[in-house]
Image (cartoon, rainbow, N blue to C red; front, side, top):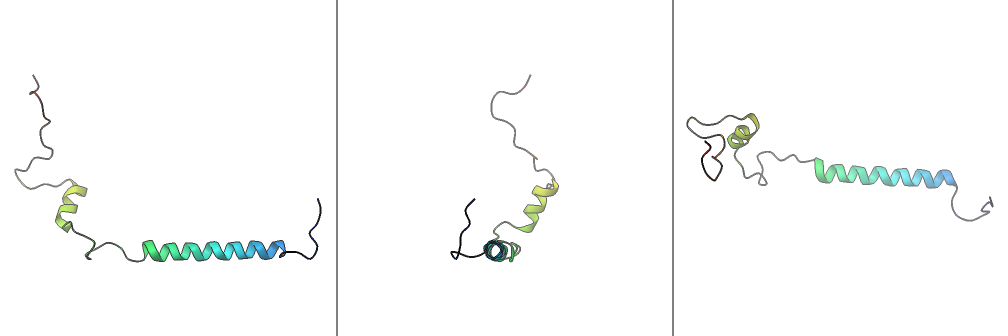
Length: 75
C-alpha cells in the first residue's frame, strides 16, 4: 500500500474533524427539533381534554365509542 508523503492531513486529524462535525450536526438537530415541546402553544390546536379522551379511551356519557359500520345490519 503506497503511503502519501506530504499531502493532506494525518488520519487522526481527519477522524477528529469528522467526529466534531457529527457532534455539531447532532446538537443542531437536537436544538431544532427537540428544544421546544408542543404544549399549550400556538402550534397546538386540539384541546387537552380531547387528547385525554383519545389516549385514555374515556368518553362522555351517551357518546358512542365508534360509529356503527355502514352497510346492512348484522343478523
